[in-house]
Amino acid sequence: MKKKLALILSLSLVLVMLTGCGQSGKTLTMATNAEFPPYEYHDGTEIVGIDVEIAQAIADKLGRELVIEDMAFDSVIMAVQSGKADIAMAGLTITEDRKESVNFSTPYTTASQVIIVKEDSDITSPDDLVGKRVGVQLGTTGDIYVDDIEDATVERYGKGFEAVQALLQDKVDAVMIDNQPAQVFVSQNEGIKIVDEAFTVEEYAAAIAKDNTELLDQVNDAIAELEESGELQAIIDKYITD
Ligand code: GLN
Image 1 (tube, rainbow, N blue to C red):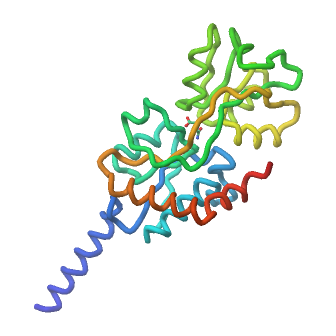
Image 2: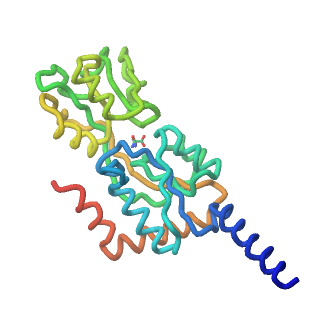
Image 3: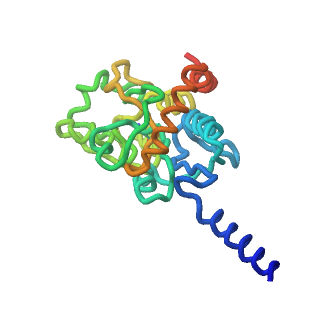
């Protein structure tokens, strides 16, 4: 009888462990789109980058195991809302619109939208995008901004790099994307450059479900500690050298 009880108890424990991947479980599930170097990208079979290391440091502080869920960029907010993921970290810009769906942590870095063009392009500032074909990554802030440019045709791609390829093949006249991935893509390809004038200044933060304020507080505390100790800057410096 005792044995049976012990078996039932341990089985239910396993069940709790299996289903407990939500807010108070042992794992911290991060929704991301690993196509965004240096914040998150594939290195062989691994997903690495600034966001991954910051998330790992947060998970360590929380005593939780980091699990990465790689998905389309325009799914990361929904993954958090639906509870599929605990946090989204994806070079994710804080916007008023997104704030209606999720809570954002304190920002951990700043970024900007820049324009990539062919080296011989006549586009030299954001104003020159009027009437042009502009490639963006679907659902990004770049996508939103280009929508406001007069007479511009927006071509949307699943990955930032696909937009860059379209530029190389003259399918678009310019690509609008975040500054750091832009630098990586430009350094990996001949004949393209970044226009000097940046478009916006944005802040990246982790997104967390509206009802999970406990995790929001924990993540904010962890970010504050990582900032204070210099760890946050050390992670960024590992990937970004000016
Ligand atoms: N920072 C941009 C945004 O939040 C792009 C992020 C991305 O493509 N991963 O929309």
